Image (cartoon, rainbow, N blue to C red; front, top):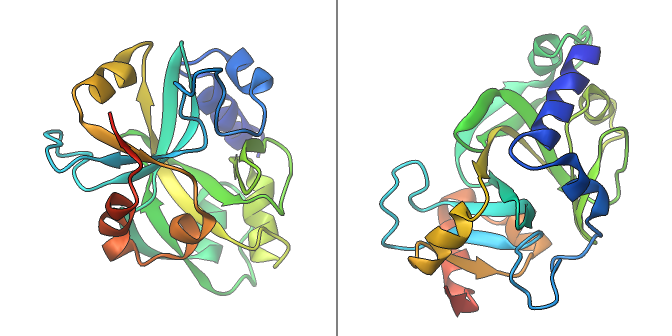
Length: 207
């Protein structure tokens, strides 16, 4: 379990200083002018040329002048037995039943699992994103999900998307992305096959 927590700490610190997370309130707008996109949805434009992100929708975990982190939420990988998932992270899955859908969260560290979830759950390593959502990467949340003590809504994702300082801003300036305010129903309940189209219909501004 300690090794798994170390992975989460590495995820938190990678590309962006840890202070970014410690200083960020549970508010989608971290700046006075609305330039930062933490807690918003990032939607690939129809013209997206990078095949890794074509027709994708991401939840922005953190974004500031030092860089950005996001999780793709519409790349399903299939279902995984909970017992097998627990075994994979070094936890005992004996007697655990049921399966959960899993998703490809992005092209970075694709072997690592993270949970994007509703804000009714808060445990070790939980990062608040909006008043409605958070992300957790500790082994505790997987045990709690298996024990029916986890969040009411959740997505289990492997990997994430990361941008260095100014990289996402450059892509936005090239009109590669749209943004949409966070919507729990869209994030957790919408049909994954139609999520990109539904999010695209809601875009509030072209960047």
